[in-house]
Figure 1: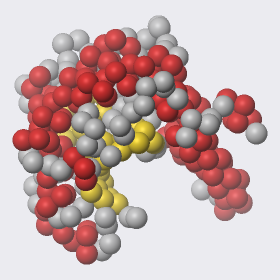
Figure 2: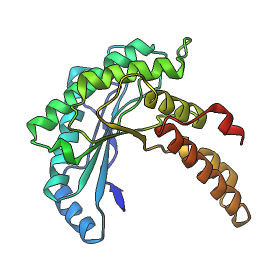
Figure 3: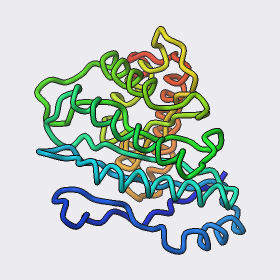
Figure 4: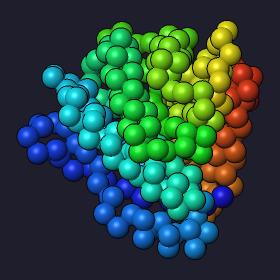
Length: 247
């Protein structure tokens, strides 16, 4: 099914240095109506939350949560499925615990805003970040630690009515994103949602590098894309192993 990204990117929040808010609500209903006539069946809106000294602030979290909820309500009014994407960035040296705290705060705010906008949770998809330490953190986390922290956060914030959680990769390497997804789907506790993937770079990076825009590399690139998709599919089913990376 075809879908479309409908936000118009982030802009700095006045009086809140280092923080942004996503724009694009003006005229959204009309745009969505036109997209639906062209065959679109779902849409996506990304909010960006930065971690740093004194940020994120409650105001930035609230502003982005409100925009996500308004977007989702407008989508459902047009009978389109909204993908709700609140991304807590990996940029920085913050710890796993800090990422968990901020992600929990963000998801609480998002679902409170969705409730206030009367969004039907049964007819949306959540696209969050996994709970991970910052890229520059000296203490990396194992897939099991990422899965445990992420699932604790999700169980505290995401209602069971949400049918699916499709994680963004957020700058993870391809193998890391797949391993973390596998760990999430092999946790002892049974989860109420389908835990799947909606990766960008972690699905396409090596494919684009192999292709390089040259027709002669098309077959190799296609094989690479098929392999990465297959490994992530195995991770969703809890059947991925690191050995599969070299097959």
